[in-house]
Image (cartoon, rainbow, N blue to C red; front, side, top):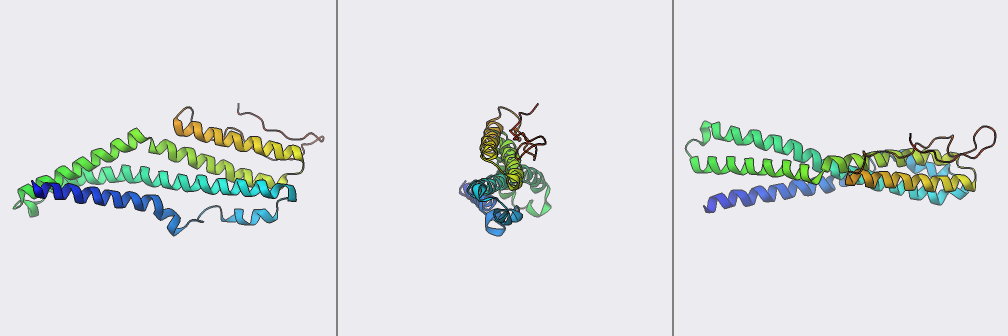
Length: 207
């Protein structure tokens, strides 16, 4: 009985360490692995758009970091569950452990329990949806950061703020599952900047 609890405790500790690595390792290894080019964009922004550009870039980095964390949690749960399920069946068949039947059974039971726990957490926690919502929001914010280079007037500045709100709203709805995560509006040069004929671009809703 004591040995069984030891196996369960060590398995729980291993799972906690793995979760901590998934959450913090991406930022520790390569916090700037994506969006490096955005660092040089501030030099291209017009003076009136620099402060807003900083907000957009920082928001992009926040969304990317969240996407990396949820991606790590989701794929760790999926692949970890598959590995542990296979390991549980393999342990019961290993002749090496035939002389330790109690250890073999406890190890297989622990692996099966952890596999079921991982897949349950992944399903009930909607890790995939949270990862996708943050990933799509980060991509939308990255595109908006490039669009800011074309900012020319105060009306353009207001359009950017509306676009940020739309992206944030789409992200939140994607996380809670109200609608598929994605960019609510597509920003382009025709929306931010002067359109042909002198009209000022404004965000257009998705059709």
